[in-house]
Every structure is written in structure tokens, then in C-alpha cells.
Length: 279
Image 1 (cartoon, rainbow, N blue to C red):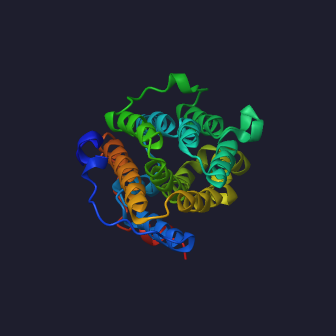
Image 2 (cartoon, rainbow, N blue to C red):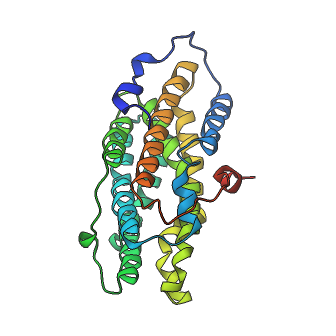
């Protein structure tokens, strides 16, 4: 596991170099290249995803995953709102509001992404336990790396220099789509606990993201950043935010896997980058 965020990622440690202005097209190209590097990062290429996709897990391990994944995902709207307050460009603010509107279910509280996720996890755990389970019943520790991800992630999104927050957003959105593809593939290990129709109804959270929503968020994270980062110094700040948030995610997945029962699962020996990298 890497060093704690506060020691590893200080903006004061960024290399100084001559500031070079960038066209919108050049900024967009540089940012997209940074974003694409996530497919080779331990935030996506890790043992957790291999094991999750390999087979169904014991209920205690599913509870551990559910508790920590929900804790990480549920503050997404708060992170977006925090970044919005730091942005001054009208186009960047508009794209961030669109993202926030998606997260909050377009005004329907029952369709907010956090509610859909909680409902899905409650249904899965109810089937595994053979009785109704509500989220407050879940017995699993909130791990230190999860707490750091939530705390330090919010700090990144709220940095006074919005370039850093845009970098964190870039990492969040480019990690999110392949993350959800991989998690959905593992979710299919539990299909036998549902009728076919029930399983797909219960997977609405995944289908919403794997369809249009998360792909649009990926593109918006680039265009938002390109509106803000128009010189090389700003790109350096963006990459600082991007690397910092991906590092937090990598630590989170590593620690989550380390607290599961290693005696029962055999990880698949394949690179997730070969599975999720877009054509």
C-alpha cells in the first residue's frame, strides 16, 4: 500500500517549469492522454476485481464490499457540488451541474444513484441471508483506506485551485465506467439467487451507468478540464489531482481485497486493462 495521501501528494512538490499556453484542442488532447492512462493503473488492475469476477463470495465478504463501496460512492454528489463551487467557467459549471443532476435522479429522490445502489445491495444481501436485510443491518467494518478515500477525495475536489479538482473528477469518471463494468460482471455470479427478470430489475444501478450516463460523464470530465487547464502549469495541477485520486482508489481496492477471506477464492490471471480498455 502506498504512503498516506497527506505525505505522498503535496502540491508544493510539483516540478516547476516554464508556463506554456495551450490551445483548447491541445489541452483536450493532453487531458485525454492523461485520462486514458487509468487503464494501466492499480486502481483498475488489481486482485480485487479478478476475485470478484471469478466466483460468488461468502456473505461476510459481500457485506464488507457493500459497506465500503456504498461509503465511497454515496458522497459523489457532494464531491461534484464542492467542485462546482470552485469553478468559474460557465461551460464547466454547466457540465458539472448536468453530472450532478444525473447523480440526484433528475429530481426524483427514488432514482438518485445512491438510493439505487443501496437498494441493489440490500436485495443482494437479502437473498444471500435468506431474509430481508436493510442497509443498517450490514455487519462489516468501514476500512481505513475507505475513510481516507472519502476524506481526502473531498479535499481534492474542493481544492482552491480548480485544476486539481478537475483532475480528481477526471480520475473519478474514467475509473468509474470500467469499474462498473467489472463489478457488474462479478454481480452475475449471484444470478442464481434471483429469477432472470428479478436479477435484471435489481441491476438498474449498473445499467444506468454502463449505458449512456457514465460514458457522457467521461467526456464531460475532459471538456470541463480543458476549459480550465489552458497552460502546462495548469495541466501539472490537473495531473496532481488525477494521480492523487487514483492513488486513493488503488489503496482502497487493495485494502478491501486484503480483508476478504483469501482461503476460498482463486484470482483470475488476466489483466483488466485487456477487458475494459475502449477500442
